[in-house]
Amino acid sequence: MKDVKIAFRKPIFPISEELQQYLEKYNRTTKIQFLYEDLLRFSDSVNILDKDGKDTLWLGVMYPEHEFKEIEANLNKIYTLLHSDGDTATLPYLKVDTIDFCTFGNSKPFRVRVRNILNDNYTNFYIKQADASRIYGLELEDLLSPNRINFLIYKNTLIEEHILGIPGDIFIQKHMLNCTELEKAQISKEFVKFNERCLIGLLGDMRSYNYVVIPIHDFDQVIYRIRPIDFDQQTYEGNLKVYLPQYFKENNPMVNMVLEKLKPSSIEQYRKEVRSQIVKRVTSSKNRFDELISIMKKDNIAPEANVVELKTALQKFTYDINFKYCKTMGDIIETGIKFVLRNYKKEY
Image (tube, rainbow, N blue to C red):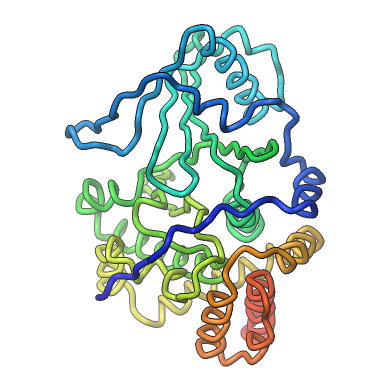
């Protein structure tokens, strides 16, 4: 199977005034005066290695003592905003253990670990450069998928909660072979559903290290869920295969397991289940979805050539002529969802 290549790094798109108003309306913004650039003032760094001694591409960063106290105070406030609606009662018990910086990826994120000194429990969150297309991806994930997403915006700064789970590449390397045959069949089903959700929501670049596998213990069995953790490649690329995780070589073990464990009829049934669930979610949050899409349709979040390439591919894929009239990535998302709505009514 040939690998899908992404040739160029996606630029960061500014947040439009309309999108900013939408975020404020739905409590996605914060007034805490702390910027991504404040974390760039680190004075030293060290490479972070994993348990096997391999470079993780993250740097542990350090700050001058007088600056760190101010940074820590602000990061602790951000933690309370994410997890306790800004309740300051816990602030005296919070400590920033580590701040890590990743130079790999478009958003160049900082990972912050905050520990509660009363019980030694810790929580991670991320601070990134705010990017309009990434925000659309987060919102669409929240609206269309079974997963809720918690994030905040302050000017050009994006604050994201940590998504728990085993990184897909680690799961494939170290855990998948130890799964029972029944568990492998269940994971195969989840990968099919994940693949379908990415296509409908046009979330791209879901290589194995951009999603997590979440094991959930349920009575006498373990069930698995798959959810994305990186929303950088939301409706940007023109190549349709970028939006199908099955085409990335890093996911070949998952794809091979699907082909081994599931019959074509079962695969189609799971795809229909996803479409059914998305229709129900769109219907139940129609006003918010329509509001987001109307803003997205006006936003320039991809080159015109990418829009033309993607709408042409989707027209051939679905035989829906409505894609022909799309002018923006927002138009394409709307047309795709309407296609699912129409076909859902026919199938059910």
